[in-house]
Image (tube, rainbow, N blue to C red; front, side, top):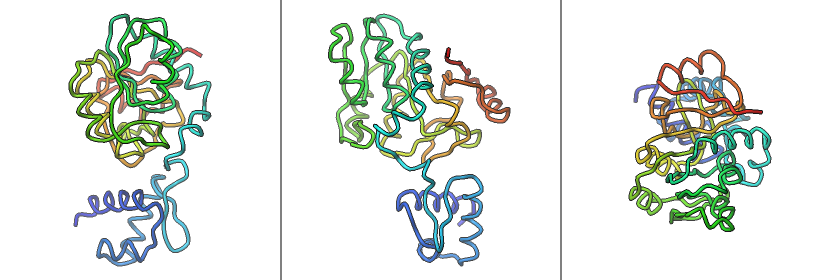
Length: 253
């Protein structure tokens, strides 16, 4: 197996199993312990895994935290970003709002607009209940209690039926190497479908997610129209975004 491919497979294996020993990895990938150590060192140097005695685990920042815990983190920044994203929504549009704690505050700022929202985000659905001017189409599927969202093939099937004006997406992290990444493989197909079905695609992330890579890449920057964030990234990430034809939109603080 080519080393680059093996390292990628090792990363996926660790994320699926959360914590594994070096012996497990040697057995799974049929290589020596020295080879595994070199591969783990490379992943650890990028912050993708965390070395522990006798094995390896996922970094605390990469694991999927419950929705309530994530919604508190950087709350002010997320409000500013959501407000900026909401300013791009016009009456009569059909929009997709992704699951995530940066996207769901958008409802507060679009509650007076006459729009249709497609979403798998339970918090968005609940927040829209009092607003008769907002037509909500909920994606069906399997309930993810940590993310407070619906996932699965039936959610994708619903999404594929609609022509979407704008998609507002979330991510666990973005990086110059891996683009927009997510810690939940179950949500990846939904995000990709939303991108395919939408005229405009916006990614909402705050600066703490810069140069963070998670388990699955769901979009490279050339698939997005703009990234809405609170500050400019460093030169390498900024170049990767802008050279792909993706705009950087700063939220007003």
